[in-house]
Length: 441
Image 1 (spheres, one colour):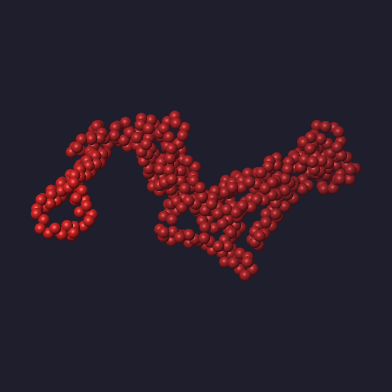
Image 2: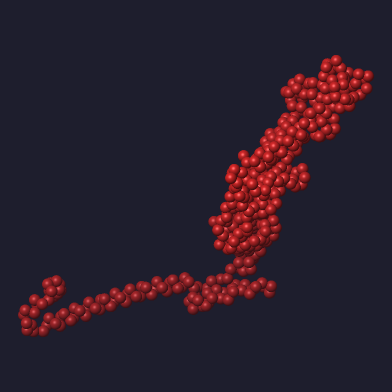
């Protein structure tokens, strides 16, 4: 591990040791005054808070006259409980030799901390937060020390077609292979709010890696969890905002959905979002996706196969345009109902207009589209097939007429006197045999 990481570990160990050392004789750093802590199955020492260290005292359980430990035990102001268990928890009273009250001590048993469970998430490409939870319940007051450092051996800068990316820092390595840049940290990770199981890192570098240190401390010890993260892998935008669903006048199966970027996402040309939209009719549990596999980058989408007359629930989520990280959670659902108007009616008559609206537009609705002057596509397909049949028939008739004309010409030629009997030799054998066969018929 690097020198900076070793230094960070030494600092955390020193702080944890100081906190734990405060729980040695008569601690006051943890919990309310007069409370001392121990671990089940281990020996526990209690000290009398109202006397000088080493002065002999007598120990009693609160409300019980039985003497637990006398002043001649040789333990001074301490009480030793061997292999403490839950029955030993409670309040103890110590008295001096003259019978005066020395003080009261409350014993609480618990366990040393285990390594906490830590996870991090970035809602944008400049800041990220980490949360944690205990891996086991200690039953004792617990604090957390949080810090982070940059792991900046190298920086990956991908190519972007829309322009240069923001400038990123780079750490220079020394001859001893130790990071010498002071920008690598460690720095404290502020807990927001103070005491919450969450800390926030502001101004992070998108192409860098970070090492998060979360140390759990209680009166019996300390335990540390180190987690390496990169913003590219933990990026998860907040869900889009302002989702609205509107009907499309004249189209009873269409809905138009629009939304805005989440407020936490800075709008810059290098870091855009893409979106996916889902919808379902009322009383239908299954969700449908608009154009599966195609995630639009715009802020509007049209649903073209809604169920006419039924309200629809719509939701949207977002992700980095270059697929960094994961999809956001779904936005809050918005509801909309398709228009009650009908689709323009088709008129399959040759030479007439392609469409004719059945209903007149309302005063506040946009002007309807102008009707097309082109013939109906189905009619065009039918006309094309008829033309093809006519062309084939014409070619067949022409071929037949050509054969008849050829036969007549051969018949006239054969009726003339043959002046050159040897002329038949000039006719190719194949043509001659065909002609002779035809004449025999």
